[in-house]
Image (tube, rainbow, N blue to C red; front, side, top):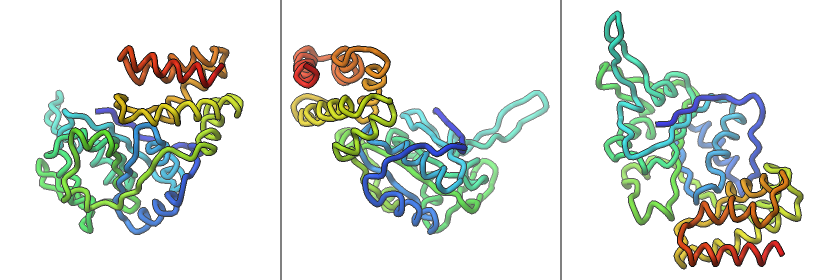
Length: 266
């Protein structure tokens, strides 16, 4: 489990694509749990970081995975030299502190782990800690936020309806071409014309989703390539390393993507 706890002093830059900021603010004010749905690298994590800063709440981020157990979230007893001591897990700390707790790619966690979120994500706003016998009520400001990629997870696993219906769902997607170019420009300092070229390339590649490409290029990949270009790497080489290679190892697909790169950056 990878956990980060922070409350940034400077604003994490985020380019809204719709009414998501106002919707999230209302959910936070009304103590409602939020589910962010969208493709990999479309800005879900940055959006949560921005909203934590905007709402002035601590943010605890947990990257979910197959081995994530309920005790990893809630806590466990540790044996120390002077006896056995209870140690809160990240979810418990968020509940006590009134933090925003963000579970990234929540469907990667086991179903028996996800079930512990139920009492926190409905009107009870309570975390039962069986090992200590405590029913911990969420402090003011606590909010549960989860994210996942429906397009990817639909083929593998999904959330149970009993879990999904405890959340307000927000559908995020890649920004419009012009907004995405502004994001790439802002995050990498590459010139705007090159940023537009990278977005144009991404739009062409994204059309190959159902033609053998498991994942399409995220805004994050475009920013990586743009950073390389801004620091002197030729555009084609930057795209090969920053976009093509991370997407596929299949020779024919790699060749097709390189052709698209060559056609975009002549």
